[in-house]
Image (cartoon, rainbow over all chains, first blue to last red; front, top):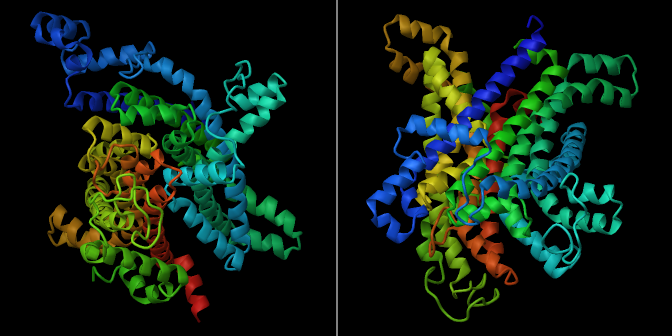
Length: 341
Length: 291
């Protein structure tokens, strides 16, 4: 425990655990805030009229106990993987989510990859060509990127590229009629490669392209803006000027002296960007009929299927928490200053 | 004395140059145009936004410049009336977030200890969720209505202001003029209100301007999900959602979406300009170019 790194790790993990408990508390409080009566939602018309059945049902589900006790029961259920039952599919929410998580991971993973490559690339170019035409163009483009309503862009992209130009395949993860690759990771692109099915791979990539690009546009804008200012800050440092003054080649100065320190904070922003990608899936998957968590959330929200909505909130909240934990730890390992502060 | 703080002076001398840049001019013109449309919608709109007339799903052309939707309502008129729904609600939302988040953040920074801990841990909890997901969860729990959607976005939006204000207050709290106020016998509230808050408003206003776009995107996103405005309200997000069902009639979804885009873009241009004007490093760059 003496080393600052160990202390930093323990503190960060404890905070994450506390936040995870906080997330469960929020979804629990929200579920109990609903004006609707769970008895009416779960029992039939005639059963609701019978006080004995209602009392029995409430006792069975622990609804007659005080709220703190109900919360502990809820927590215990969660630890056993019980996220409740969807009112729409009448299946456990966990099962529904388990089916849709790989699709969303594939989509969000592709989007974050595209965002990192393009966002960081554009940001570096804009900073190096500061106040020239390309900087101004990239600035306007990145502002447009963070201003476009994702749900609208998804619709426009679907209409233009699928319906009009027919350059992208339609909705879903692979062409209709094609059998999915044998499941290893649940990611069709990876599974298709693993089983050597090139036709499925190219179909999966084709289907992934449009929704991933639509989803990535916001984070590309975000990362471009952040990278630009991070690089500009480092460019103004004395040691960069010194490196130039002693005659080091431009490329060495750029990669060794500028990009290395400038791109470290980008890791944190990439973690935050992943959060907006997860948010975006709710708005994009519905339009592209992508069978992931986002579409499940969209369907649950539009039908006010509360257990399902809360399940999505809980799972996505915890996934986001873990990603930010990993990002923070990574940041702490790379940059010693973070551990001390 | 208190008005002559760091940000007040900068605002006076450097803003005019920043406002002459193309992005600032475009942002101002577009934002003002939308505010005029919102105010004068009954005078400007060619049709009743709720009137259902034939032909249905008419493409853009004379008579219906932006076409009609599946119920035969004029899309241009609906977008104009929609400005009266989306823009005031978004401004109200951001104003409330500034006031609530700002006050909580100021209290956290000024009083410290358990007040700080309670407020900031609550903020951390909100930050632990991706925004749309938390807003969706709150809106679904409260029930689908525009008012509840506003409340849901408010829940997501206040912590950013709390965090920024807290940081700024921590910086100002120990300055001489604040301490001398306390020594003169100002109460904690008076000191906070008179000496501290005016000195933190600059950056908070920049954040608010940049946040108008985000708030509008969130609010219309919730309506798109069916958790906000109810039909027949001409809310832009709900209008885009209406276009999903008839997406081969592209005009139904395209134009309301463009309305959202232009408003968000205009306020982001303005926010960017404000931030540059208040940031000493970029402000210097503007000054050098202007000379």
